[in-house]
Length: 454
Ligand SMILES: *Cc1c(COP(=O)(O)O)cnc(C)c1O
Image 1 (spheres, helix red, strand yellow):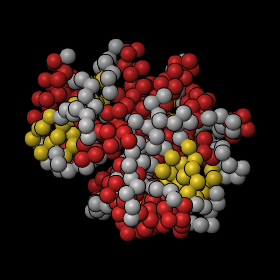
Image 2 (tube, protein in one colour):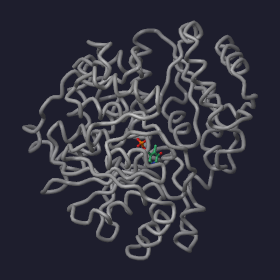
Image 3 (spheres, helix red, strand yellow):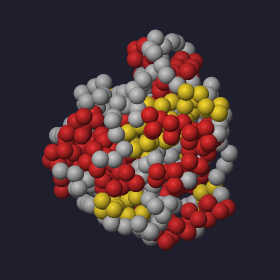
Image 4 (cartoon, helix red, strand yellow):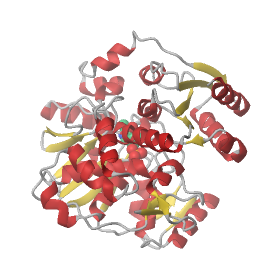
């Protein structure tokens, strides 16, 4: 299997190179050059558990890694989860919930980043390379990325976060990882400052190549690939095609569901549920993709205006016409708006936006009806599911452990229900962080110093 860019400037990329490349060099995103039809495999795959299904599916896409090696990487990635089945479907009243948050940082990003960490390590060891990962986080991604690569000899990770502006719990999830290759940088500035510093550093190509900088953001193809597995797995647990409700920010999670359907898994509709940052809901209603101002909501992991994986969806929507994708994205980049002639009608995606109040109500309603405690992100999907109650069966994707968001959850439920022993224990652990000014030069100097020390 080879990969190409959604913008047409890059072709024939092998899987291992795609893992390291992240963003394609023409600014587009990597996608498979063709999608296999796996429908004939379905009967046999129905009995497989999550990791066995991953072992059956991933070799189609990672054919430059020997199967025994790939199987070992999959086993190692998912051995870190709290439940042996890795993901599970739980009932919540008349809804089904696909819990993806049983990994080390208690959020769905672990499913992809635990595997990505293994893949990075494997490819770098084979090539005798060292990678310096730099990223900015407003909360969840940082800890999941750190958990994916902690303790690895051939990787250092530098995560910038706004000092004093991530929740205490989120900060502890990063700073209590005291492995030598982990560097948590508390920057005196906003999340935007952190992101701009990272972008500026990546734009300095001389620095980027000299220090072998890499990224772990959600555009990495291997993250999408890992996420296809849980849609595939969940769809095979039912006797009829399954509909999914997916709380959405960067479109990475739901895009994996879209691909799972294209591969032949029995999937009906995909409901894209956004919070008040509704660029995607507006797009699916009108065909216009138009940037708005970011609002801060109960679901910070979805406080995103520009959905970085959306371009992959467009590529398939345009029938793999990279020229049309490039033109659409160029319009959007220069004017902040790009449009289709009509609302998209792909027969798969439905979309709706959920307000903060509706999110809190959904947490309370679901709890009173079923005793199930949902995190706010999951609740956005549950509120959306109520609006599409003609779809059956429906599986709501549960993206975080509720104890990661105790204030919102406890107040919505009216009881002190949001606890997790691992989060409670963080408060007593040793932690390490470095404080830096919001200054590109200071961050670069820090990276140089650490790389030299090793
Ligand atoms: C990242 C995240 C999301 C959004 O996922 P996307 O792939 O960006 O759409 C939803 N919920 C939680 C808890 C997350 O961490």
